[in-house]
Image 1: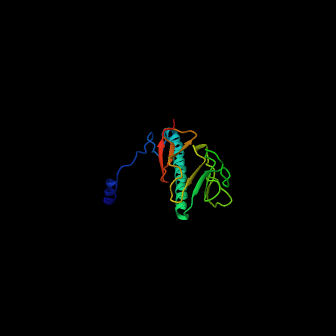
Image 2: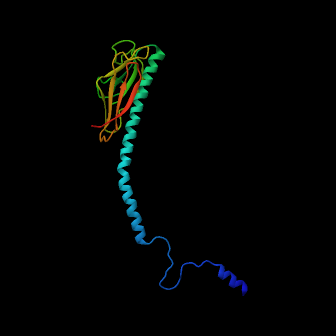
Image 3: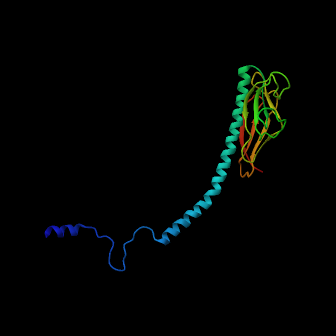
Amino acid sequence: MNRQSNESSSRIPGPSREPGHPRSRGFTRMKLKVTLFVALIFLTLAIPSLGWFANNNRVAGLANDFTKAVTVARRESLKRGIPVSICSSTDQATCADSTDWSGGWIIFTDNSGTAGTLDDTDALIYTQDALEGNISFSTSVTSIQYNATGSLVTASDIPFSLTPQNCTNNQKRDITIRPQGYSTVQKASCS
C-alpha cells in the first residue's frame, strides 16, 4: 500500500478528464483556418517576388552566356592567329544581317571572303539558339570581328542591351564589348 501511495504522489497531474473539460487533441478547426489564412497571405506576397527573381536570374544567365561566347571568339582568334567573327543568326548556319540578336548567334573563323559573313572558306566554331521567352537583345551592329591579336577590328565600344518583356527595377543588362576585346556587364534601369 505504501508503494502505491508514493507512485501516485510523484505523478504530474495531466489535463482534467472531468465532464465539461475534454482533453485537447491537436488543432481545432478554427486554429487550422487561421493557420491556412496566414499561410495564404505569405504565399500571396511571395509569389510575385519569385517571378521577379526567376526573370532576373534568366536575364543574368543570358548575359553570362553571351559574354562567354565573346570570350570564346576572342580566345579562338588568339589561338588560331586569324580573325574570328560573331554575328546574329536565326538559323545558326548563316548571318542574319540584323541588329536583333535574340534569334541567336554564331561564331566562325573569318580569314577570307566578306568580313562578318560566314563564307564557304570559314569554319563554324559555335552556335547559340534563339533566346527563350520574350527577351529583347539588340545592338547597333550585325557582327563583331576580332583580329588575330584578340582585339576588335573597330576602335570603339560595342553596346548591347538585354531586356526582358516585363522588365522591372534593374533587370535589364547592358553589355559592352571593349576595343581591347573583353566585355563588361552592368545592371541597368528598365525605363
